[in-house]
Length: 504
Image (cartoon, rainbow, N blue to C red; front, side, top):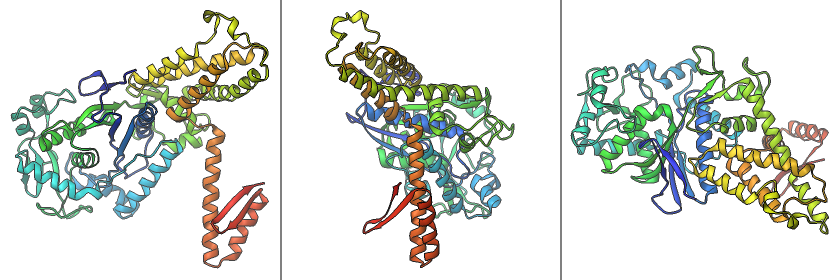
């Protein structure tokens, strides 16, 4: 089967042909860490986690790069007071890098909660200032950028004069863009209103600043992704992903920067995840139709009748295709919970069905049945699952096929144990394939498994606290932690290689 990916650049599904056979370079725009990650972000990153898992399951070796934006950028009105990091540092009375650390930790905790795999590389914008300055210098030397009053701008008109096409991704007309754009950010510094900043001169009030050939300043938002993606994946790489809201101007500017700097298109396949709505309305703090990921999991909100386990939330999200708008509601979450429970119960039934078959070796009706009499053609089902996966990572269709298998598992379980409807080989193939799709590809976890991981993490924290107490000779606290855990049936054992625990 050939993998097909919907390419936002051509607006068509295309057969995927990686630059290096069997390998995939994928870059996804990460969060700007000035506040808690919101549920819409989680939907985007979860979509690309599913794509990442799918590519690996299909046999590709993937280098997955997802950045952290930890440098402040001006909003389009050019006012330093509207820089998100500046506003948050004043609000919380913290240093900028304290804000960065606080919300980067929050981002990772939330993604761990929903069982997202970490990327292979997670570069930060502030860690690549040198590369961004070098890229800006190269664009100036090639005549695609100009310095103005300590800032540097990309010359969009010059880019188009040379036969290139600013607007090719978003399908926007450059003349209309120029006619309808006001120069808010440049404040008269730009040659053209649509020119975008590669480097901005820092005003005295701007906290995050770096030295450059043009004076103290900070990099433009679009520049960081071009610098980091090309550094780790090359001048042209396979897949670039992000939310639909980044298509213009962010990704449009990345294409222009890449083509102007390296004389080649930076990305072969552009992929965009669609937005998340709640109760059929856009999520917004200003309207009150808004919820954080942890509030959905803990139940501390006014929109949902109960808390929902992270795997149930993940399962709900994957029932919509990544390119479709996903709407969540109380009814949708309740339905997802019922489906999730039914799925997990079916998976638990499969081993017992196999045992029943193996314990009745003398009775085998499978060979006496014609193929048309079989209730479930496992090999055909496996092919259908892979067809869904290869069709632009169609998670809702894949899930529908998974539930086709689930329904047949319940039918098999209802048949008398001495009657064999399928062969042992088919049962084993069914179990192997179903587990691979549910746990490896969809990334679901059993609730028990997830709870065990949480227990393990909690106990490791307590063990570390006890170790610190012992180092500081606070033996009273050390003994108290040990004794209280023992009272709950958890015995700590100190050994040469550290402290372990045993559940009694």
